[in-house]
Amino acid sequence: MTTNMPESRTRPVATLADDADFIWRHIGPRQQDVQQMLALLGVDSLDALIDQTVPPSIRLSRPLDLPPPVSEFRALNELRAIATKNQVYRSFIGQGYYDTITPPVILRNILENPGWYTQYTPYQAEISQGRLEALLNFQTMVADLTALPLANASLLDEATAAAEAMAMCHAIVGDAANGRVFLVADDCHPQTIAVVRTRAKSLGYRLVVASTEALKPQIPTAFGVLLQYPTTDGQIVDYTDIIEQAHRHGALVVMATDLLALTLIKPPGEFGADIAVGSSQRFGVPMGFGGPHAAFMATKQEYVRRMPGRIVGVSKDAHGNIAYRLALQTREQHIRREKATSNICTAQVLPAIMAGMYAVYHGPQGLKRIAQRVHRMAVLLAEMLRDLGHELPGGSSFFDTLRVRPVGIGAQTV
Image (tube, rainbow, N blue to C red; front, side, top):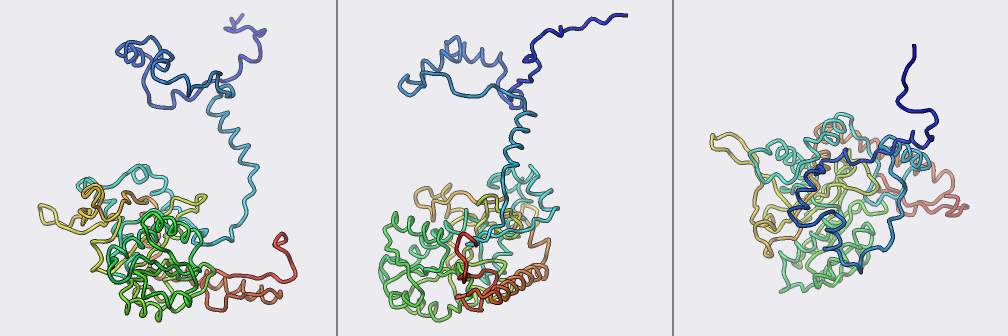
């Protein structure tokens, strides 16, 4: 019995290569659709269309220097080979970014679920009740931990949230009594100071960055003060005096803070702070090479109409049932245009929902246990470093961050 082979064994090995590209992995026009569109435009080919629309001065006179196409399987294998060269180190930078554990149920059912991650702003409340309720959970969590009555449904990151808070302070206080000076403690996170400085320049504010003691004499000339709590090098500071002084002179106080630390330490609202901002990243959201992470902002009830970002509220539907909707939308850009409270027109909804669900998953006592364990590990590390002869100039009042002055070794060894 003989078998007729469709291909000869003498064919080149190159014919065995799988050079299928990714075109059929995407939803796009079929060749018939392309020809119909070209005919409607009166051209014979895509090249002819480009010749008529793209000026020669900005086109390359040579073909693109690209490798030949490969299959999806081969491309993934090549990417994996590159990834194996990575060396993953533990990050000790801190400054508002911390490794965290994402509960598998949140990872699987929210972060990896297209029902959550493909959604946009819930303008249509009728079909967005689940997302709105999840964002209300986030707002409630932030309000509870900061001890401030009102929180928004997230902002972009801690640094831009601080810049938004600065603009909010000026909108509330104005120029009349306190001028256009904003004070920033120099122990805020460096990226926060940088973003606030950039925003202040564009808004015409004069920014003063100094130690809290050096800032106190300048409070009478300022409309607001930004403080970090805990500080970027980990210290827990009692800001009661500077907050009281600011209020005596008509200035507002913004505290950039850490939600996990607030499960154990005095919250901004109890200090009398007017606005609290920060990142919710460590509530179960992976660092992701720097983002995206959901920032938060909380404030006093009387400042609600000056708050940027979206706010989810509780209402009733036509049948008298509890319903959720976006509240106070007349502050926002899609309603007020150039007269909006802020130009911020989006948020970090998916990371915010993850952070809110992380709090629901662990509960108040679970969050406190996590914070206590983190603090105990930091205390143990501090004791070991001191035993080895290294100096910790920051003092003993800290949550999870230490500033270390190595003794007997250089930076390269560290």
